[in-house]
Amino acid sequence: MLGVLSAASTAGMANAAITIPPEIMDVFTDLAVAFGSLMAAGGILFGVIRGGVALFKLASRVFSAAGA
Image 1 (tube, one colour):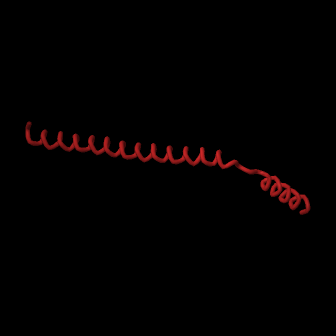
Image 2 (cartoon, rainbow, N blue to C red):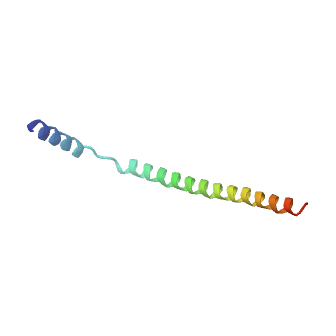
Image 3 (cartoon, one colour):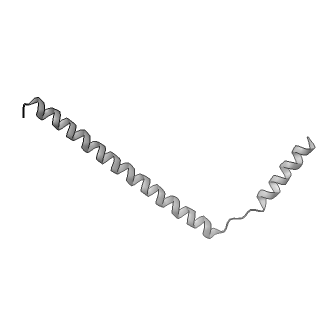
């Protein structure tokens, strides 16, 4: 039991000593925003391409059924 408590207190003291400079946080924040923007753009592009393919499939069925 004592070993668990001492290990927990040591881990708590080690975590308290870690400080992250604000510049590093700014860099990772900018990277997260850029990644989110790229993911959103990729999702939109995927939707546009998938919708276009679906429209072409629908048009091909309509025109093939009409005998064109």
